[in-house]
Length: 307
Image 1 (cartoon, rainbow, N blue to C red):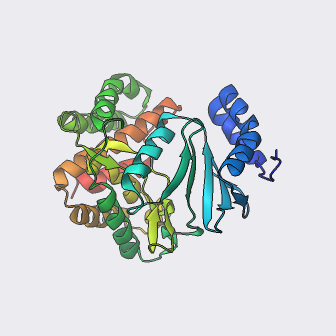
Image 2: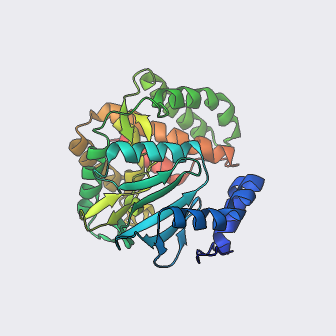
Image 3: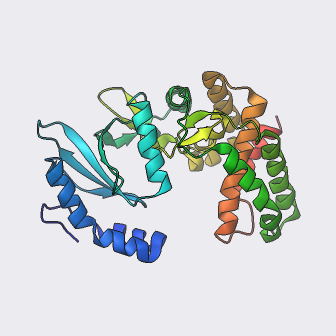
């Protein structure tokens, strides 16, 4: 699928859109060539490299009229994409990719181009990599969230309400007890949810090498809340390597201590909100048909509760 100005829509991305969003995704991706052509013309952009994609967005390397490299990011209009635009505008490039322009009707963004071939996962020393991520997270979560962002308090109360039905899907009584304990931790914190802008998905692969700074965050899914709710993606980074280390609990604890020290968080509160992320992940898994808690989730819980 291609546009008159040469933007190719990979078949794998077409399949992902249809798989994830059904008929709506099929209709949206069918209109992508025309949308891309219109934006390239409107912003006077020239395609400048191979198109890349994830599950939810198409990334087109371009050059602006003055030759500056940039990236055109195309994604379905969603609450998450609107939140990303809000977050990028508020952060204004401080620790995160800079928003250059956007189209509110289509949720398309024009952002500065980073080095997509080098993520923070390429840094072998885990303390060094986690130190970089923690520094970025501290900068991002230092900013007060604007009123239009979704609030963690609403998310937390909704999760707790889902637990009685969700536990019935788990076959192991130990898993049921664990899920209930995570819900109890969230219930204790839900009325003090915080008011910072959270990235919500800051792991090693969402930090790219850059020229403006050595490393910058990408792909935020902003939420207003407590920074403790933002730690789990970092703790879970490069999990296969962590699990294979033979000491996953030690690695998680070391990461947690580094993150909470850098962000200046009270550890018991950060632990509770991290259990909230485990609860959220597990509820999503159960919704998708899981009948057991994921080993990575239970390992993180064990590392933080049995010290």
